[in-house]
Image 1 (cartoon, one colour):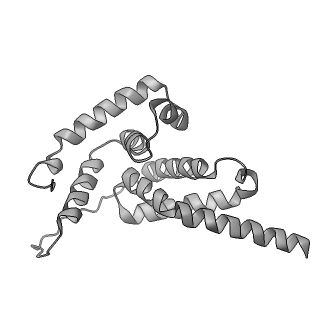
Image 2: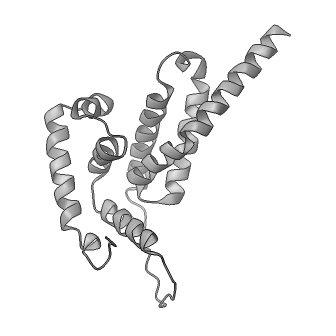
Length: 172
């Protein structure tokens, strides 16, 4: 009876964690992938693997573990899909849709993020979405702080120069 009660408490504790982190993890995954469907898959993978390690992680930093799992799963996804055909957002027909300025801005940012390398997206996600310092980003990704600085500089320059971020596409 006591073991099942402890298991129920553990499961309830993880559910609270998952509910609290799901939106944050999704935003981070969206920055990593620039694809809403792939982002949802990454979040699910991260939560499944975090749940599997929950007994070990409870007293530590499960959110950081989930982000790391998500980053590694995205690298695996990128390597696996590297040689496959890529779907495009453009269809032959002319679409007639009424989008708000916020949707257009988000779309422009996602299109600009696609032009970044996977490493640049990981660094941008941690530095600007998760608000990590250079040292925290370096530690999380296992790369030198100087690399974080140069990758950040290069990624920001690419985003600023992106045709998707031009004044005509991004509402200010």
